[in-house]
Length: 322
Image 1 (cartoon, one colour):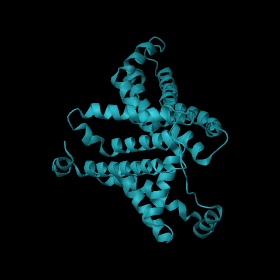
Image 2 (spheres, rainbow, N blue to C red):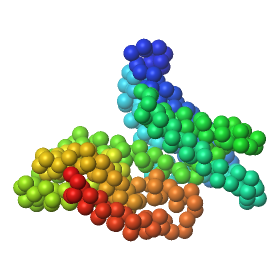
Image 3 (cartoon, rainbow, N blue to C red):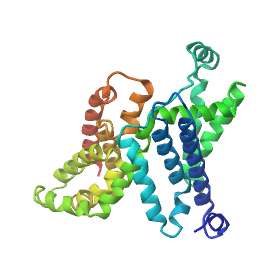
Image 4 (cartoon, rainbow, N blue to C red):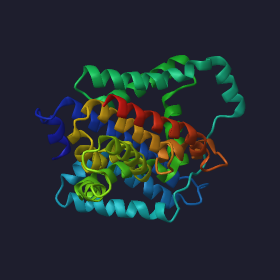
């Protein structure tokens, strides 16, 4: 479907169209990051860095329309192949970064105090409101929350001009680098595993271990499976599909457990695995890069005790109330 046809089609929901606009804005920001790095003479790897970000921006922002073209999926595949070459060779590097000075940061901290967290709060609240009270979807709500946060920051200080947000976005993307696409890759991996029948394979092995009709052991294996598979996948949303098909359905829900309690706790116990793995890059590795921490796994080490305690509590809760 062409660009014009997509936005002119009355049968396509407004939420889908708005979400596509969000992706296009994200794509343009990535393209800007690529162009800036490609033109940055202080970047020792400016051409590979530019190639990575520009292609990523094209795929995120216009992937739907590229795939709608003749041989579109092939074109997308070739673009992805070219895009990952600089990342694999570790040639995607940040160039000149215009960070706020220490004096500027201290001055703004003293002036604004805890108000700086209001934009972050607006994103969460907006996502919840859009998810509960509209048909537009939570992701559109996140985008609206970002716009509200930007507007609030511009009101808070005259120094916050549109160009400041553009530069800060580029600085954040350049600092995080190729790790920024890892959550998308992991989410895709979950869909691929499910389509490949990994859940059925797991079920065939687990039925040899779990005694038939034993709900207690079924719940324990299901919860621990969610933890370990989330550690592998890096994302509980990706893991729950595979583990529920393989263990949750035949060994827990089929024995009469409450689907509401099991579904809710399976996801939260899976997120305990998120606290324990570098595969959850957006939680455990990206902050290390952003804060320039010396210990690469420092975030994970500090989360281990809490994660283990929460796993025990949630298994006990599922045993008692499901």
